[in-house]
Structures are given as C-alpha cells and as structure tokens.
Amino acid sequence: MKARTLPWWIGVELIVSCILGALGLPGAWFLVSDGVFFAALFAVGVFAVRGRPDRTPATVQSRISTYPSVP
Figure 1 (spheres, rainbow, N blue to C red):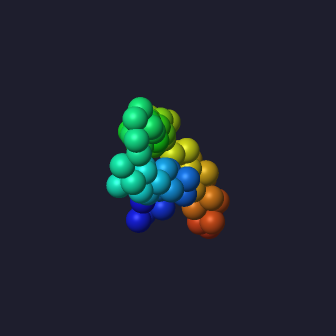
Figure 2 (cartoon, rainbow, N blue to C red):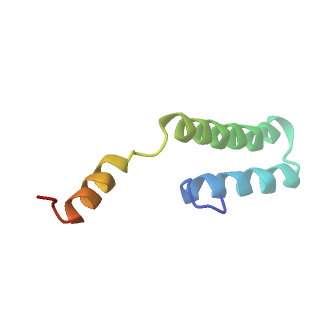
C-alpha cells in the first residue's frame, strides 16, 4: 500500500473490514467484515497475477535513438 502499487480502494476495503469487525455486528451481519476483507484479498491477487505493463522495450528504444550513430 505504501509503495502505491495497488489502487486506493483496496486500502479502503481493508480499513472498512477492520472497522466492521470491531463493531461486533449482530447475527449473521458479522460475516460482512469477512466478505469485505476477502474481496480485498482477491483484488490484491488479481493485481499480482496481472502484473504491471512492461515498459522496457520503449525505454530501450528511446535510449538507443539518443546515441549518436557510428559511421
């Protein structure tokens, strides 16, 4: 979270799940905090599997074009 590699809403989901768990909701409502937490974990897993887009080829190409050509 601190590295800002995940969307902000995942952090909000984790905080909300902690608050809902601390409220001690009655009956079956206590499972809402677990559902929110597992949804956040699922989203973290999806972002981890998808990964970040690879920007290496464009960076390498731009650096190659900046060097002077050798005759």
